[in-house]
Length: 201
Image (tube, rainbow, N blue to C red; front, side, top):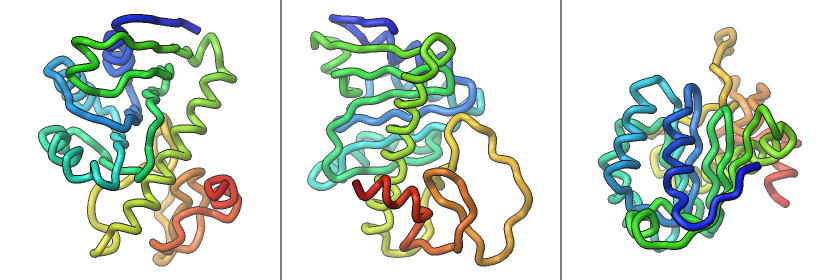
Protein backbone atom coordinates (compact mmCIF):
# COMPACT_ATOMS: atom_id res chain seq x y z
CA UNK A 1 0.00 0.00 0.00
CA UNK A 2 1.36 3.41 -1.01
CA UNK A 3 0.10 6.58 0.67
CA UNK A 4 0.48 9.92 -1.11
CA UNK A 5 -0.29 13.32 0.35
CA UNK A 6 -0.25 16.62 -1.47
CA UNK A 7 -0.30 16.47 -5.25
CA UNK A 8 -1.74 13.06 -6.16
CA UNK A 9 -2.81 13.50 -9.79
CA UNK A 10 0.32 11.65 -10.91
CA UNK A 11 -0.86 8.53 -9.03
CA UNK A 12 -4.06 8.55 -11.07
CA UNK A 13 -2.24 9.26 -14.34
CA UNK A 14 0.21 6.42 -13.60
CA UNK A 15 -2.72 4.05 -13.01
CA UNK A 16 -4.29 5.03 -16.35
CA UNK A 17 -0.95 4.79 -18.17
CA UNK A 18 -0.26 1.32 -16.76
CA UNK A 19 -3.67 -0.16 -17.63
CA UNK A 20 -3.70 -2.81 -20.34
CA UNK A 21 -7.22 -4.24 -20.06
CA UNK A 22 -9.73 -2.23 -18.04
CA UNK A 23 -10.18 1.03 -16.16
CA UNK A 24 -12.90 2.30 -13.86
CA UNK A 25 -12.76 6.02 -13.10
CA UNK A 26 -15.44 6.92 -10.54
CA UNK A 27 -15.73 10.37 -9.00
CA UNK A 28 -18.48 12.89 -8.28
CA UNK A 29 -17.03 15.87 -10.13
CA UNK A 30 -15.34 15.97 -13.52
CA UNK A 31 -13.48 18.65 -15.47
CA UNK A 32 -10.57 16.98 -17.29
CA UNK A 33 -7.22 18.64 -17.83
CA UNK A 34 -5.01 18.06 -20.86
CA UNK A 35 -2.82 15.40 -19.21
CA UNK A 36 -5.84 13.35 -18.12
CA UNK A 37 -7.46 13.57 -21.54
CA UNK A 38 -4.23 12.46 -23.24
CA UNK A 39 -3.79 9.53 -20.82
CA UNK A 40 -7.36 8.32 -21.49
CA UNK A 41 -6.88 8.62 -25.25
CA UNK A 42 -3.64 6.58 -25.08
CA UNK A 43 -5.33 3.92 -22.91
CA UNK A 44 -8.14 3.62 -25.45
CA UNK A 45 -5.55 3.24 -28.24
CA UNK A 46 -4.05 0.28 -26.31
CA UNK A 47 -7.46 -1.40 -26.29
CA UNK A 48 -8.30 -0.64 -22.64
CA UNK A 49 -12.01 -0.83 -21.73
CA UNK A 50 -12.74 2.44 -19.89
CA UNK A 51 -15.74 3.04 -17.63
CA UNK A 52 -16.33 6.61 -16.41
CA UNK A 53 -18.84 7.03 -13.58
CA UNK A 54 -19.85 10.53 -12.45
CA UNK A 55 -22.39 12.14 -10.15
CA UNK A 56 -25.83 12.43 -11.67
CA UNK A 57 -28.98 14.25 -10.55
CA UNK A 58 -28.47 18.02 -10.83
CA UNK A 59 -24.88 17.53 -12.05
CA UNK A 60 -25.78 15.09 -14.83
CA UNK A 61 -26.01 17.51 -17.78
CA UNK A 62 -22.93 19.48 -16.76
CA UNK A 63 -20.85 16.31 -16.37
CA UNK A 64 -22.12 14.87 -19.64
CA UNK A 65 -20.97 18.05 -21.38
CA UNK A 66 -17.57 17.94 -19.63
CA UNK A 67 -17.08 14.33 -20.76
CA UNK A 68 -18.38 14.83 -24.30
CA UNK A 69 -14.91 15.11 -25.89
CA UNK A 70 -13.92 11.80 -24.28
CA UNK A 71 -16.99 9.80 -25.35
CA UNK A 72 -15.24 8.20 -28.36
CA UNK A 73 -12.66 6.71 -25.97
CA UNK A 74 -15.09 5.40 -23.33
CA UNK A 75 -16.74 2.01 -23.19
CA UNK A 76 -19.35 3.48 -20.88
CA UNK A 77 -20.26 6.84 -19.39
CA UNK A 78 -22.64 6.41 -16.48
CA UNK A 79 -24.05 8.42 -13.58
CA UNK A 80 -25.02 7.72 -9.97
CA UNK A 81 -27.36 10.20 -8.36
CA UNK A 82 -25.64 10.49 -4.98
CA UNK A 83 -22.10 9.45 -5.88
CA UNK A 84 -19.46 10.79 -3.51
CA UNK A 85 -16.82 8.02 -3.78
CA UNK A 86 -13.55 8.61 -5.60
CA UNK A 87 -12.01 5.35 -6.77
CA UNK A 88 -9.81 4.64 -9.78
CA UNK A 89 -9.06 1.04 -10.71
CA UNK A 90 -7.21 -0.93 -13.39
CA UNK A 91 -6.55 -4.66 -13.67
CA UNK A 92 -3.28 -4.04 -11.79
CA UNK A 93 -4.03 -1.53 -9.02
CA UNK A 94 -6.57 0.71 -7.33
CA UNK A 95 -6.20 4.32 -6.20
CA UNK A 96 -8.56 5.41 -3.43
CA UNK A 97 -8.37 9.16 -3.14
CA UNK A 98 -9.92 12.41 -2.00
CA UNK A 99 -9.28 13.81 -5.48
CA UNK A 100 -11.98 14.42 -8.07
CA UNK A 101 -10.96 14.48 -11.72
CA UNK A 102 -10.95 18.26 -11.84
CA UNK A 103 -8.35 20.53 -13.39
CA UNK A 104 -8.50 22.67 -10.24
CA UNK A 105 -7.80 19.62 -8.04
CA UNK A 106 -4.86 18.61 -10.19
CA UNK A 107 -3.32 22.08 -10.14
CA UNK A 108 -4.25 23.69 -6.82
CA UNK A 109 -5.57 21.24 -4.22
CA UNK A 110 -3.88 19.33 -1.42
CA UNK A 111 -5.17 15.78 -1.82
CA UNK A 112 -4.70 12.30 -0.37
CA UNK A 113 -4.45 8.90 -2.07
CA UNK A 114 -3.86 5.27 -1.18
CA UNK A 115 -2.62 3.01 -3.99
CA UNK A 116 -3.29 -0.71 -3.60
CA UNK A 117 -1.27 -2.96 -5.90
CA UNK A 118 -2.97 -6.22 -6.87
CA UNK A 119 0.29 -8.18 -6.81
CA UNK A 120 1.30 -7.01 -3.31
CA UNK A 121 -2.13 -6.64 -1.67
CA UNK A 122 -4.53 -9.03 -3.44
CA UNK A 123 -7.18 -8.91 -0.69
CA UNK A 124 -7.32 -5.11 -0.64
CA UNK A 125 -7.41 -5.02 -4.43
CA UNK A 126 -10.30 -7.53 -4.54
CA UNK A 127 -12.26 -5.36 -2.11
CA UNK A 128 -11.70 -2.30 -4.32
CA UNK A 129 -12.73 -4.35 -7.38
CA UNK A 130 -15.99 -5.36 -5.69
CA UNK A 131 -16.68 -1.70 -4.89
CA UNK A 132 -16.17 -0.80 -8.56
CA UNK A 133 -18.40 -3.64 -9.73
CA UNK A 134 -21.11 -2.42 -7.33
CA UNK A 135 -20.74 1.14 -8.64
CA UNK A 136 -21.12 -0.12 -12.21
CA UNK A 137 -24.27 -2.02 -11.20
CA UNK A 138 -25.69 1.07 -9.47
CA UNK A 139 -24.85 3.23 -12.49
CA UNK A 140 -26.58 0.76 -14.79
CA UNK A 141 -29.69 0.90 -12.61
CA UNK A 142 -29.55 4.70 -12.83
CA UNK A 143 -29.20 4.49 -16.62
CA UNK A 144 -32.20 2.21 -16.89
CA UNK A 145 -34.28 4.60 -14.77
CA UNK A 146 -33.37 7.49 -17.08
CA UNK A 147 -33.52 5.52 -20.33
CA UNK A 148 -36.31 6.30 -22.76
CA UNK A 149 -35.29 4.01 -25.57
CA UNK A 150 -34.34 0.76 -23.84
CA UNK A 151 -30.91 -0.58 -24.62
CA UNK A 152 -29.21 2.27 -26.49
CA UNK A 153 -25.89 3.76 -25.51
CA UNK A 154 -22.61 2.27 -24.42
CA UNK A 155 -22.47 -1.23 -22.93
CA UNK A 156 -20.99 -2.22 -19.59
CA UNK A 157 -18.82 -5.34 -19.58
CA UNK A 158 -19.86 -7.91 -16.94
CA UNK A 159 -16.37 -8.59 -15.55
CA UNK A 160 -13.66 -5.98 -15.10
CA UNK A 161 -10.15 -6.77 -16.21
CA UNK A 162 -11.18 -10.01 -17.90
CA UNK A 163 -11.52 -10.27 -21.67
CA UNK A 164 -15.00 -11.23 -22.73
CA UNK A 165 -15.09 -14.67 -24.21
CA UNK A 166 -17.78 -17.23 -24.44
CA UNK A 167 -20.28 -18.96 -26.60
CA UNK A 168 -23.07 -17.14 -28.36
CA UNK A 169 -26.08 -16.80 -26.11
CA UNK A 170 -29.53 -17.97 -27.01
CA UNK A 171 -32.05 -15.36 -28.01
CA UNK A 172 -33.74 -14.04 -24.89
CA UNK A 173 -30.79 -14.90 -22.64
CA UNK A 174 -28.84 -12.17 -20.88
CA UNK A 175 -26.28 -11.80 -18.12
CA UNK A 176 -26.01 -10.19 -14.72
CA UNK A 177 -24.22 -6.85 -15.11
CA UNK A 178 -22.31 -7.41 -11.86
CA UNK A 179 -21.09 -11.04 -11.88
CA UNK A 180 -21.75 -12.06 -15.50
CA UNK A 181 -23.91 -15.11 -14.70
CA UNK A 182 -26.47 -15.95 -17.35
CA UNK A 183 -30.00 -14.81 -16.50
CA UNK A 184 -33.15 -14.07 -18.47
CA UNK A 185 -32.72 -10.91 -20.57
CA UNK A 186 -34.69 -8.17 -18.81
CA UNK A 187 -33.60 -4.53 -19.04
CA UNK A 188 -35.63 -3.73 -15.92
CA UNK A 189 -33.84 -6.43 -13.88
CA UNK A 190 -30.18 -6.58 -14.97
CA UNK A 191 -28.91 -8.24 -11.77
CA UNK A 192 -29.11 -11.88 -10.68
CA UNK A 193 -30.92 -12.47 -7.35
CA UNK A 194 -27.69 -12.74 -5.32
CA UNK A 195 -26.16 -9.56 -6.78
CA UNK A 196 -29.46 -7.72 -6.36
CA UNK A 197 -29.48 -8.55 -2.65
CA UNK A 198 -25.94 -7.18 -2.31
CA UNK A 199 -26.71 -4.06 -4.37
CA UNK A 200 -29.95 -3.31 -2.51
CA UNK A 201 -28.06 -3.12 0.81
